[in-house]
Length: 107
Image: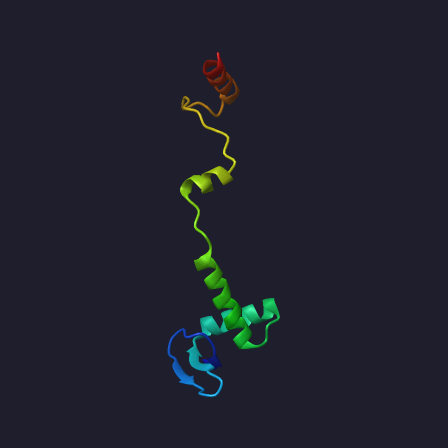
């Protein structure tokens, strides 16, 4: 394990610097989170752990603050056209069954 300045995942201790009001967090990362941190640093070219933590917190806050859509809004965005009730043998006979259903509906 390696000790890093990072978001509190397991154990942490907070110190407040009276002059700058910065907070320092000390943490022990297990191997899983150590490799995850290294992966994020590599993919984002952010070598500074503080920058990685700030980006993660901002992403989390953006997700929490994003307006929630209703089920109807989500459904409308799918561009779903419609559905029909049909026989179990729809797959081999789909053309004739769909044609019949359309004709019944609009005639």
